[in-house]
Image 1 (cartoon, rainbow, N blue to C red):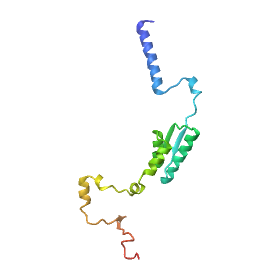
Image 2 (image 1 turned 135 degrees about the vertical axis):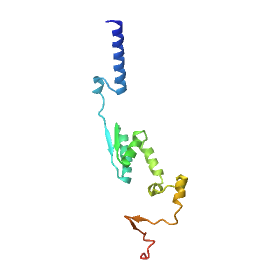
Image 3 (image 1 turned 45 degrees about the vertical axis):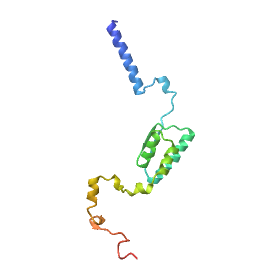
Length: 146
């Protein structure tokens, strides 16, 4: 074997070893010793999704490690926070510290609205709600409400 071929062989072996480390490929002897992978999928459901915090706490207490997390709506938020390293106690603290009335009203505070948008919004004296092209008045505004 020539020196040039030896260099090529050595470089090929180094590339294979490096790629197996990057891709996480393990030798067959270590594969048998590993535990099975566990995936967790959390669904949506608004406030019911906060029950997942308790479930994650129980998983942590019994030592069940989660490898993959997926979810939708509130499940994706709780699962995402857990996946990036927040403990169930920290997630619960975040949930309890939120001003849920402000979050659910979908009204942006005036100081966060761009100046030109504020100027446009303030051009009208009154705003009338429309639903399916028809004027809709609240019960408090109509004469029939007594």
